[in-house]
Length: 217
Image (tube, rainbow, N blue to C red; front, side, top):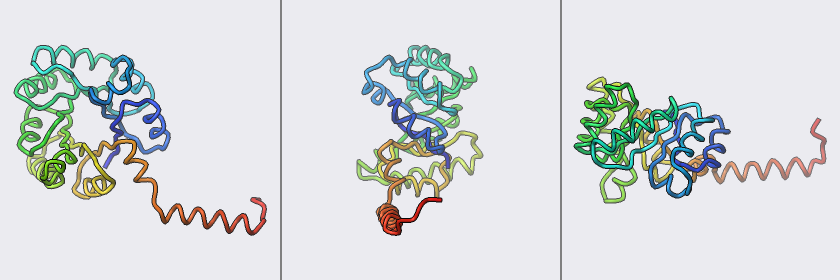
């Protein structure tokens, strides 16, 4: 399973990219708005150093304007993947962009039915929001498992991005289920790296080495 970072913060993205485990980035209007910078400049900046898909989302909700925005976003860089929210108009946009050979990420997926329709329409990626499904008392990982099974049976080329990750176990189970990608917030990436036993081990090794008074040679 590949790792994407769910962020529009350039410093966060550079930091995780430097770890050598980043395969792409997903953004959304809320994440971009937090940065208080020009939208297109942020996307161009990310694409300048991330070697992989960078999802940038349309902000309109009607077919004509979503399509116009999608075309503008796709022209920013060859790595841009246009995020389109699932809806009647959204499916039409996804289908049209597929005809234009523009990659898409069907976002705000909360059911297997939505993912199925998006794949049939030609989406490059679908993003089930497993954390938000959990938030309303349902099982997001169960929905993810249904989508993975359906896509395998149908032999879709559409890739599944496990999104709205709330904690490290979401990542582990997503990988075990067979999600192609997990898009993960910066804070969760840090939680994945850290472990109390690792911290204790480093502290013990450092203490013993200093106590030995040996040279590192």
